[in-house]
Length: 464
Length: 93
Image (tube, one colour):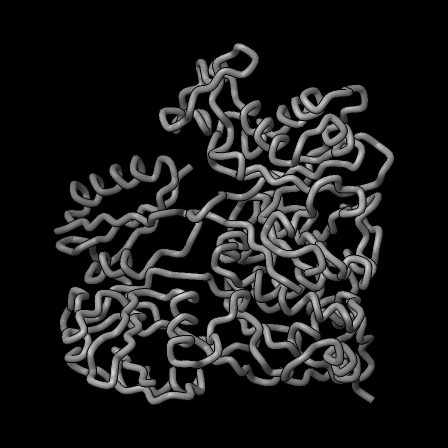
């Protein structure tokens, strides 16, 4: 196996050193090879036969292709599915095709190594209260537990692998989140060591480009990453999924959500007095972690719908606004319950704006039961919400400059109960349904998203 | 005895960039205008381009646009602005 670099000596050597590549990397200084193989994009993969003939080629990055080629070479898969990077990317234009300006090339992208630098040791001056010092220096406005070496050693007992392994680079400042740094923030948040089982995949998922944490952390919008926990880990680590799931109900929910937020602050650098310039913020930036009440969910659990098996624990991240409550205690049919929810759905982002955001519907067990006992599947409920959530055309009259009005030419007109409306969401898949909360009370919640889809933030689900 | 802590903050080394010298005049210069693709950005930049040409006598205006305001600017868009003496990045809502 041989790697070909289009960068200069300095950048190539630094890259090889950082990644500790197990194969030879050579330079292509005048792009002779790049031209000979007609490379359009980098990275590109070529599988050559013994006679030098190209047996297979692929432009861009694709985990499936990488693993298939590894298989052709009788090697085990090389690309992991849930390592924090997307499944595929188109790549960048090959340098020999780039327009050249004064013979310069664009600077090589900064790509760090898989091994980080050990954290430095801080010393609290004699006589200073360590709790006050940490509160002032690392806190989220609340006291934290001082991250002493002893506490971090205990926390790291809950994590496999070297403490200096880089788990992710956290936007927007792209700080290296080593296992050690993650453990330090977990200590401060009050996590138990076993929570590292969740925190490491959580940080990988958080750095998955599809979530676009860079935008989520730098926007003036309300968005904060909501963590949704599914599977056996809920009971193993005592996550709450019954009453008060959005509240201060359990150490697991509160401390996991808080550890994540401390990581985003202290490693990612999105401090609320600087880079994070959210106009109004979100109370979820203290902690925003819920679990599905799978036992009260009459349908398949959320993570099963997203491709995992029942016994696989999983976490999902969603760039979320705060929950908006929907009280519906008297409706007795699926249609009536869902119509009440659709009115709240129509208001996400802002009433007149359609097609811009997704939404999560957190159904209370009682509402889920009402819908299910009439024989409805989760997909039917979702389709109904999609078909019955819209904004009446009369809402746009006399408001040509209002947010949402300017894009109205792109909207799809539908009839809802005989009234001409613009359909609110792009597809039924824009509406996600989760069942959670206490078994008494007919209260559900609607949670709007930040800018949705590939141009904004996409929901990601990772195994634990 | 002092208490020791493991630093929980970001310690990743960063490359320090030095900003270029401030322009003394815009006359005869090339100015890049980057629209981040928010609604109304083009209105603002259209007016700015007019002012730059009429009042500040810039020689050339290069317009570029991010594919989405929600993500960092792609390298290929930055390349379009290479060579400009100054760049104005604008958002408008």
